[in-house]
Length: 142
Image (cartoon, rainbow, N blue to C red; front, side, top):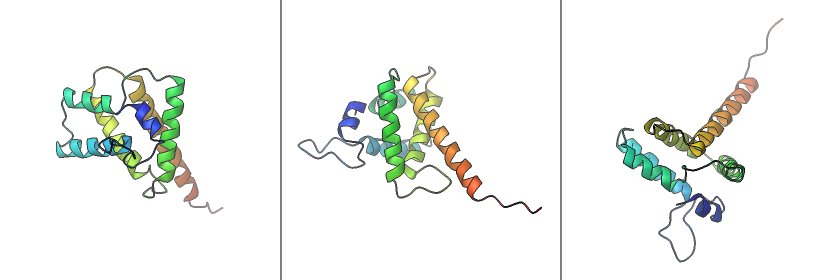
């Protein structure tokens, strides 16, 4: 599924409504890619990685419009995922990060969209963890 289809689904986690129930949402595709990679013990070949990356629309230029849409989608998923912890990414975003990190390992070339999304996930994780550490720090005794 392309990012345009992802956008048209309004960043929802569930199957599309309408006459084409066989389309899977973007996040369902990520879950499937994650499960497939785990089943293969994270050893995927370039052809499988290419298919996953194309399905997730990770090839191409990371334009400002694309970045805005990707950021909005990632924030939406983070805010809506009930499984998130105080000191980590949400469950869905953790699976996405694992899939993207493996794809980045497989591909010899750099891909702007893949790198942008991985960078966003790392920045979000760093901010969450820093806030967690700040909120749980022990007060110093004088």
